[in-house]
Length: 239
Image 1 (cartoon, rainbow, N blue to C red):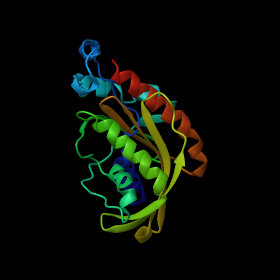
Image 2 (image 1 turned 30 degrees about the vertical axis):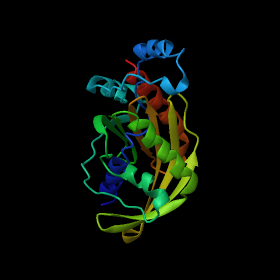
Image 3 (image 1 turned 60 degrees about the vertical axis):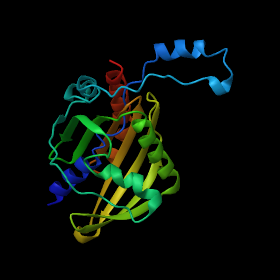
Image 4 (image 1 turned 135 degrees about the vertical axis):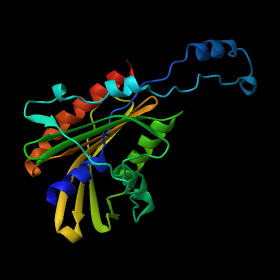
């Protein structure tokens, strides 16, 4: 039971989170800007090229592989979770959406799951893409929520959870990224799970990344994993 819940939490956080995707091009937009430079401001129009979603190949290139990790890790597997999580505080709702497998408006591409030992430590990542400015907008909402939400209550498979949040320093390398520690207290099981979460956006892409350490001492490894995830994602998004 304990192992199943830990896998479920990691998959849900699938924060197969926080690295992003590619920036949009705009050669023609630059030319149009020059053409309109001599016009009054009221007559000038914006003709920037529409943001292009990431391709499946770009999303795959942005996901971590076993060869990217230190020795001792092996490929894992997370089960699909159709649960939709609802926070009891409106300012926390963007963070609650990170617990679901699917993000509204996004197309999910590559995902990766890894474990160490007998599932004591887990890593989970997803790379996805949005139309237009969806990725940037989503990640910005996460950042705003982290400034105003210290915790909330939700339900998982009918079990009540009390969730507390601690903002962490996110690695650089993406247009916008946020990291935090999420402590889930599952009352019905008298069980607490702590996860480190990263969300990042680049252009039309986003990544969610979650790290579930075996114990409190394992939290120190998150910075290194988050840096790997952001760098791999940003590189893949621009490939």
